[in-house]
Length: 329
Image 1 (cartoon, one colour):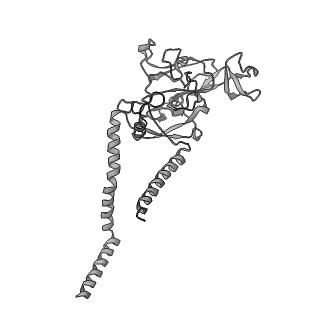
Image 2 (cartoon, rainbow, N blue to C red):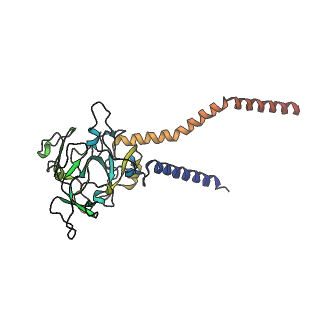
Image 3 (cartoon, rainbow, N blue to C red):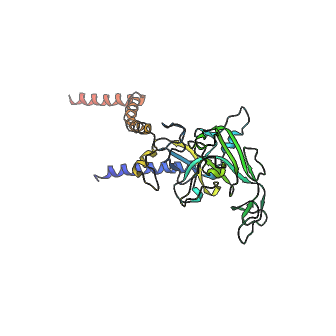
């Protein structure tokens, strides 16, 4: 049984890991309950900061049905004097979604607005086309209760956009600098956007107002946005494509996974975007975690030795030893 101590340690380590995973799943209601951040698109500081989403962080991901997603627009709509709801450094929730529903590395960006259909019409069911508006293949038509409808007008919660054929709204409080591309805009602007279907318009905090849906949402005053694996532009993020809502941050520890993966051209940038200070913080944290049990053990032993029970036990032991010595004499 000389291998029993090693086997026992292995069981304890495995049990601890499983218990941790179960705890995270119970907390988030999502599987997987955590994602590793690979890029710098959500960084608020080049050196990284706790509270924001940096490359190399682990982010707990809550199930999308666990609560309502609050967009940036809705968070900013709060009345004067009330506390603005923030998540990871800015107003509104950060969501994790699949680009156009593809099964690849998901995107973790902030939900800016949600385009919701107002007035709809039944489409041509033979060709799945619309004489007016745009064909939304995800919605149930209000007239014939079949999936797929023609959206004529839109509403956007958190703004004054109601029953509008196109979505335009200025977020003057969301500062950026787009002078390089000739737009000369100093804040985020949604201009004449006509989504193909209901969904979220999303943006990385570090992307200088270049929304994921590209120029189609900003009258081409910003960059091209994101593309899926087939080269198609990312559309409005439907609820079906949302994997979860970004929750608590576990800083730095995701860098270990990125380091083991390495940089690849088609899947992962490796540690390319991990802030340099992350490595110092990670090393210091690991050192503290490894050395702390030694100090804790010493403190616990000192505390126990001073307890009445231990003092009584020690006195009783000394008394027994003295009695045995007297008997031996």
